Amino acid sequence: MLVLAADTGAAAVRSNFRIDQDALVSSVGAVAERVHSPGSALADVVRAYRTAVEQRRTVVLNLPLDVQELPVEAGPVPAVAPFAPVRPGADAVQSLAGLIAAAQRPVFVAGRGGRGAGAELRDLAEASGALLATSAVAAGLFADDPWSLGISGGFATPLAAELISGADLVVGWGCTLNMWTMRHGALIGPDATVVQVDLDADAIGANRPVHLGVLGDVGATAVDVRTELDGPRTGYRTPQVAAGIAERGRWRSEPYEDLTGPGGIDPRTLSIALDDLLPAERTVAVDSGNFMGYPSAYLRVPDEHGYCLTQGFQSIGLGLATAIGAACARPDRLAVAALGDGGALMSAVELETVARLGLPMVVVVYDDRGYGAEVHHFTGDDHTTVAFPDTDIAAIGRGYGFEAVTVNAPTDLDAWRTGWQATARNRSWCTRGSLRTAAPGGWRRPSGATSTGCRVRRR
Image (tube, rainbow, N blue to C red):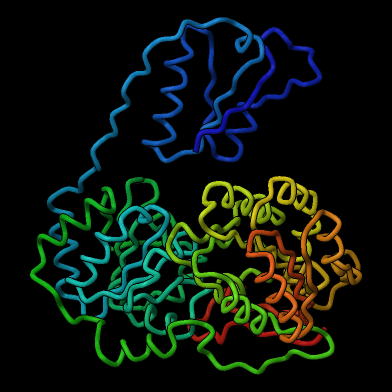
């Protein structure tokens, strides 16, 4: 990503607008670049672009105000040829191919670094007899594959957790296999062989020991390894596993006690109903918080571009802005902003942005009347500062120009369905789900591959 940011001039050392933008950018892990002068402007921009694209970094290009005012001669823009994918070493390819050939129950877990290699990974998985899964940030990469287990980690279905933890070979493709993706290691069996494929040498083994690290582009590595295999193999792709995935491959297939009642709607019931109502071509942007497992686990996405997770720095309140970006970038898809009530109230001003830009969007607020993570992490403590009074979030949405509905029971969605169809799906809707308070789901448990997942209880 390349971010253009104005900056104060070099001589404006006493300006009250002046902050150390380079330090600010570096503090969050991004790269600070600068347009230094009219003569260097083209080279400065190309350098920033190359860093962003070739190193897969967020680059903030600072544009000092005094430089912006200066004339520059127009010149030809140089061709920026992309680098060829980094191919892995031959020994590493043969080693990985040997491990795959010997495995009986291989599982491939693709992360952010594998998002551009879906076809290559599917082809290799078919030859290997491997099941497919993703980290949360790559959700949807294998959405239409019958051997896909969905998201690995806290959002995993009970069946996915069982099959991943039963693997004798786990290969992370552009995936660091961190504590969230592997449930603090609980999804890696005691006798499993672990392999990590990544372009970044520092990422290999960063979160857990690996038996083999392969330095190379995910797509190129998958292609090279495929040439070493005869395939296709059965491996983990047995009729029994196929039947299990068909029957229990999604959270909505898991039985649960619907706790909808006077205190509000069960968040699972709300999420399943929305999944049925919303068009398949959607982009789901999920804010952070105790609620986040429900939209992540129950709302389908069409591909890896259909899911945006705003978990950076464990900060809440970023989901709505992310959904606005997704709506502008992909106007062909309906943007769905899934927010908790805490994050929604923090970012409520952005509702005006949605309405002003005329963006078709559905904002779903999972309202459990508090900062749910704090409520459930600190049981027995004073929750005065993290529990909220009942807030009519639907009325707030209407004030900004949204159509809005509060859902306390499934029948309340009938009004939403009628209004949604009547507006030809080109209006912004705010759907507030008044929830029975959600207890920590599987995504909040530190370990345990057999977690039953989303549960709710009375306040």
